[in-house]
Image 1 (spheres, rainbow, N blue to C red):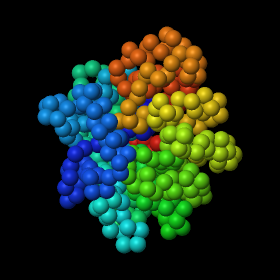
Image 2: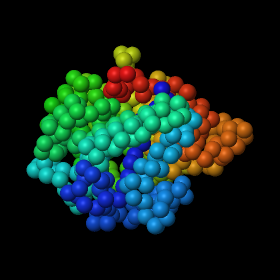
Image 3: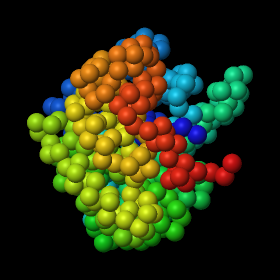
Image 4: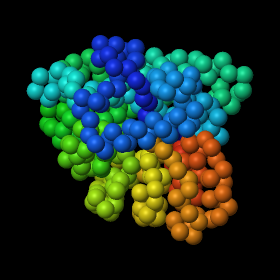
Length: 360
């Protein structure tokens, strides 16, 4: 199965007491000038894709999921996508949710129920190609929350979660903190992989403010406890003039983690199609073995085809460029861009080797 293992969901709920029934998104009380610009750009891009179905000038949670369903079912390249939850920010001392610093909150209960609904809808499709597709649940449990044990138990015993998702800076998670040892041990004993953001994070205000928490070297701690880890974005910089390029250092870190031939540290290719990362693609393709990589789109981060110019960006051929420009589906466009740059087809199926997939 060709799986997109890094796919975000979004919504417009603003009531923190209603988070199990709607996605909570409220950044106005904690915003950063850069994220204000970014959110406007993302909303405009979603509108251009037709997300504002009722044309009221707003994209509701329901409309966003309708767009996801439309894009996924029309994709010719992707058979499964992992939709990612995102737990709130909690005080490491009290375990209580920090409402001000929580800008996006997607609870496990909400997303699990939504995915169950979406998969039920797929099964009613008359087209067998759509019926064979599947949404997967990517859970998120912040180890700082006071009730993390019961929340993690819910995820492990009552859902078909295929991974746990963290953005350390955004969620204020110190990955190296020894108090998370029990959390890691539970993940390891249940074969639950950890998809962890590493490298610069510009999507959330706290990601910009707490970038020290997103160092890929911190992954050594969960690896020590036997957790299988997926490092997002291959630890690549977003803006080359601002962010340090540590691709070589990250490769050395991966090589050490996987030295016995058993791949315990993976990396995903999410958001590598960004125009600011194009110059890094040849290095990544040449450096990282394909059997260490997992495909991800990072949707709704825009996937632009036009910057991947033939004879300029890696070994892009004119015919490939034309096909990319003609491809309207963003998931398919992302796959075609990566194939044209030399990524192996194998990365599309590697997720099956890593995710905690439900029994067929």
